[in-house]
Length: 441
Ligand SMILES: Cc1ncc(COP(=O)(O)O)c(C=O)c1O
Image (cartoon, rainbow, N blue to C red; front, side, top):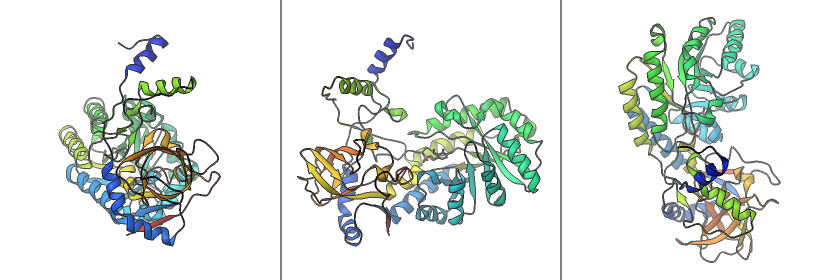
């Protein structure tokens, strides 16, 4: 039973074990070392730091995801989530690989248009009037996922004024959504929403949408789909079932075996552990804490495993409708495409300062997440314990605690692979500018 008193709650938390696998990411290190010549060639042409975007790797991830979901989901259409990386080359490649684009703001919608997609999904809470007008202007290629009853009213009025019909879906949340219930309406209100939408003849309501981020396994999607299928079978008006033309299951597919996390990380759902309390307590009392494991590796279902499990569930449980199925993958497409390339700017005892930092990654991910940092000038398959910082005037500008390296020296070339998702988009002009991206083919 869940304790109610605060001390017992904290004690219970301390008993939680991190939900991670022990292991290493040496395969990432070996791949990076094998690319040494290519990366060195770029550093001869361009000063560090920079993002290095590998076109072939991006194309491979886009193909792998689409092939898997095309195989197992009925009438599947993927939309690349721009928020994970808006670089024009990434958007263009996604479109070339048969993806639509998933935009969440006027800015992303405008970037999407530049990549000339066949279709755009426009999703997000609190859309402005200008954003609704933009969707209406491009109604021929746009499906808008509405977020609320209020948005239905606003979009309905604007569409009527402009005499423009627009295809739409409604986003919902279920009991499995947790903090993601910021978005959409409760599942139980779908019937009411459908009825209400009848008042707006210019809105062609045809779909249902949900999204939860950071999913390691297919079960997260299946839990929501189970609630949805029960609701549609038992509570949704039968007369409207044939109007449901698409179900958009969102993004959130996590890359397998590409990164890890420290025992004290509490940043993502699967990293919540007593370790965080332990670290805080020891930091507070100024003591050193030694955890039994250095870090854990994040393991997730592969795209094929995800698609197979989700597709099997859909085929069995959604026979009451005849719909297309949309996905909105972000991270899983672009994460492995981009590395951060930097140099060691200075070394002091066990402190290494690189020439690029959170101006390239936005947040101090390195405090919570483990990703291999590799010295290409003096490579090694063994890690050394150093504190690796960026060059900004804040202690939060931090990359990690370990480096694959022989004895490092100032000027050594460093590569950090798997930095393509939510780093370039979160990068900030804090103290230093955001460095450029170079593309290798
Ligand atoms: C609505 C929506 N779709 C798709 C995504 C992409 O998620 P991911 O990059 O984890 O696949 C997000 C991310 O937050 C989102 O909010």
